[in-house]
Image (cartoon, rainbow, N blue to C red; front, side, top):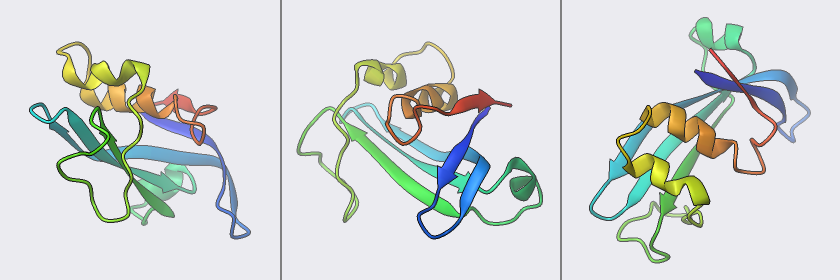
Length: 114
């Protein structure tokens, strides 16, 4: 599953059906942190053609305000209510990451698609 929504890239390009996928999910159970990449394509067709994403965003979540490791320039996101989704045996980790994205302002009006 992935997300679709309208995205204005603030460079003159507006994608009406931007296709958003999640990759490279890493969960550190000991330090209670999660990080993953969010790749945004102009459309699903563009992704299926094997073309590069327009934008790749790195999401880092930690329940510790001073994490053991955070990439340079990446501030941890305050732990959301559904943060525990990443640390439970329930559900699929990728599905949980997509549900988490829908809690962020940038992606809140996205629609989960296959």
